[in-house]
Image (cartoon, helix red, strand yellow):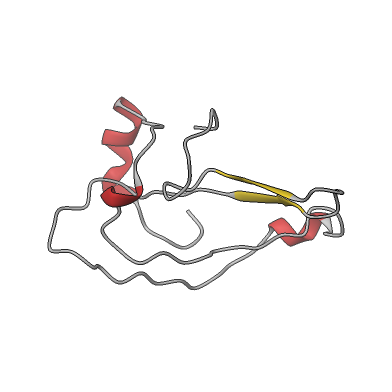
Length: 95
């Protein structure tokens, strides 16, 4: 997917796909933003992307999953608000 060879995970992922919640203290590495989209002004082609990224392990521990999340900034409102699904923020129903 997106240039990352995850073929070694395919048989396990198809048997038992998992969408779950994790707490921030469960993250074993630094984080990085992979893509930032302006949903108001973007073009359809903007979702076709390739990007390099890296994370640095911060603990000597096992890695059990790749954790991804998104934030949505409603900045044009009278009272701007951000919806975050980050493990570092309060849990929401988005899973």
